[in-house]
Each structure stands twice: as structure tokens, then as C-alpha cells.
Amino acid sequence: MSIPDYQDCMLPILELISDGREHRMNDLTRRIADRFELSEPDRTEVLPSGSQTVIANRVGWAKTYLKKAGLLANPVRGIVKITAAGTEVLAKRPSRIGNELLQQYPSFNEFLNREAVANSSSSAPDQSSTPEESIDTGYRELNAALADELLEKVRNCSPRFFEQLVVDLLVAMGYGGSLKDAGQAIGKSGDGGIDGMIKEDKLGLDVVCVQAKRWNQTVGRPEVQAFAGSMEGVRAKKGVLITTSSFSKEAQDYIQRIERKIVLLDGKTLTNLMIEHGVGVEMVRTYVIRKINFDYFENDIG
Image: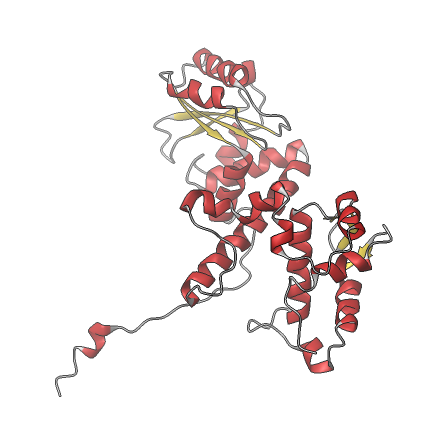
């Protein structure tokens, strides 16, 4: 048989983990290959990058999509187990599980359509897309999955490590002067809710107050207003309030009505900035897309 696509792998994965136990992804990949009676060449076929086998890649994406829909859990790296929602789906004896079925789950739609909200277009795979559009869609989906995984990691890190993460990000963005300067400025618990003050630039022409907390609940106006009050105590005009959760509409409206400039960074924005500035992530591979240089051929005068 030919190598199944990632959607064809979804139902077999749930069936193989339906016992409720924890299963290793490596074992699941092998068992999926057995289920589809793949030949040895099919089992060992690798992606163009050479970084992973095709079947492992497709099983991995099937796992990711099932996880986003809440049908399986990924308690630790490389381990999966079925959830109550996954068991309920199997009880209905579906003939196939694919994106269409998963779209009944809000968490899956939020993941799949994150870019659709911003671009007013669907980010779901489309066979009619041009190669460039397909590459762009894949790039956005990869970053969306990475951002979700990164935010989960940040939320579980220690307070001290989170402070260092904030330092690394601000320095990577051009604030704080240097790691040494920023490290001395952040993490020194200040008065009234200010975690530290950093230089706005390497010359230190202005300072920025920083508060960085790993909140789980939505941050409301009272917390933002308290931060603004703390800035008054040190006569600062600029501040950055960072959270791993989100901000209420009242909090966002409040900063638009005050004289001080306060930037609110929620968990999604935080992880996107980490990806953009290479903090806590690493480059796996780079694709170069070329087009004809028409100026070059202008030199052909016959």
C-alpha cells in the first residue's frame, strides 16, 4: 500500500491507544506502518530535507491535529494517551477521522484558523492552492503549532527562568543595553508591582518599567492600573506588562486613555516575539525560493 496521508492516520492512532494507557510515538509509527502494510522502502522513505521519514512526519501531524481537537493528550515528549473526548468519538464508530470531523471542536478551529482570522481566508489545506500558497500555508501552520508548544513550555518554567527568558527577549529586541545590564535591571523585585527597569536603548536615554508574571487567569484593568500607578512612583513614562495568559478588553481600553505609554504583551504575542527573535527556538532548515532575474537577460542583445 502507499503511504497514508496524515488524515488517514488519525482513526488508526485513536484505535491503537484506545486502551487508555500511555503509548510511545515511535511505537505508534511502527504499528501504523504495519496497519497499512507498508513496504520497507515506504517505511524508510524520507522527506526532501532528509530529517525524518515520511510516515513518521504524517503520524506526527495526525497526533498534533488530534491533540488540538482534544482527542488525545501529550503528557510528555514522545508519549500520547487517549482522552475522554477521544473515547467518545471512537464509541460512535466513525469510518474515518479527518479535518472535517475535527472542526466540530472549537480548540481545533482556533488552531487551524488562527491565520484565517487575520487574513480573512482559510488556512486549511487546499488542493487548488499554488505551490507558493501551499508553502505559505504550511509555514503559518508550523509556526502556529510551534507557538502553542512554546507557550505551554513557558507556562511550566520556573519563575526565575521566566525572568531570564524576559531578559533574553528584551535584549534580542534591542532593549536593556546588554545581557549584563538587563540582568541587573530585571528580577530585582521593586516597589508596587514593578519587577525592574531597563534601558530603552544602549545609550540609556530613557527607561522602561517591566512587570512579567506567569498568570493563568485573564489580567484585568485593576492589575494594569496598579502597574501604571507604580510607574508614577518612579516617574517613568513607559512600561511593558508581560503575561503568559491574556488581557481583558477593559485593560486594553484603559491603556489607550492614559498619558503613560504601556505595552501589553499576552502569551500569544510573547511566543510570537520569541519565535521572531530566536529566543528559546532554533532553526531546523531553510528553504530558498528562486525566480527568474529578468534584469540578467536584458544583457542579451543578440
